[in-house]
Structure formats: C-alpha cells, structure tokens
View 1 (tube, rainbow, N blue to C red):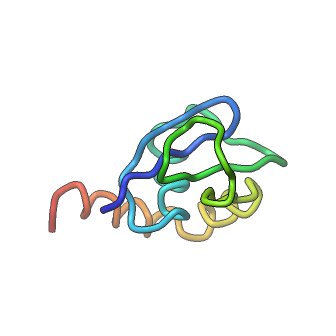
View 2 (cartoon, helix red, strand yellow; view 1 turned 180 degrees about the vertical axis):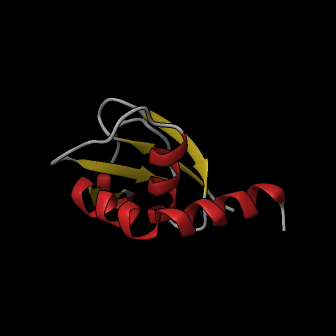
Length: 86
C-alpha cells in the first residue's frame, strides 16, 4: 500500500492506504485528536513540506465527516482486516 502524508493545518499523520480518500479517513479516525469543521484536509505522497500543490489531493472537511457518518463501521472493519493482513 502507498504511504500518504495527511495534514489539516493543526495535525499531521503518515498512513498507508489504498487511496488518498482512504488515507484521509484513516488518519482522522485513528491518529487525529479532533475533526476540522469548515476546512480541508491535504493528502500528499510527497511529504508534509509546502510544495507545488498540483500533486496534493484536497478534501473538504464536511465531505470527509459525511463519509465517516455513512461508512464509519465499514471503514473500521476494513482497517482491522488490513492490519491483520488478510
């Protein structure tokens, strides 16, 4: 799985995920201490440093919170399955 760098302006996390969206969800649900409201999450494969944003993926925080509410249980089951390796 690729490694992603997720940041929200206050917190940062490095996670492995299948996609940038999954990386954002994984970081928020397992590493971050709070949720960003009316902001955004930045997901990069290049690191945390400020660089050309063309390669970064931006997710509106309200979209991410909706995804967590919709698929939170399914995401948690998938995360546990990935961690256990089967």
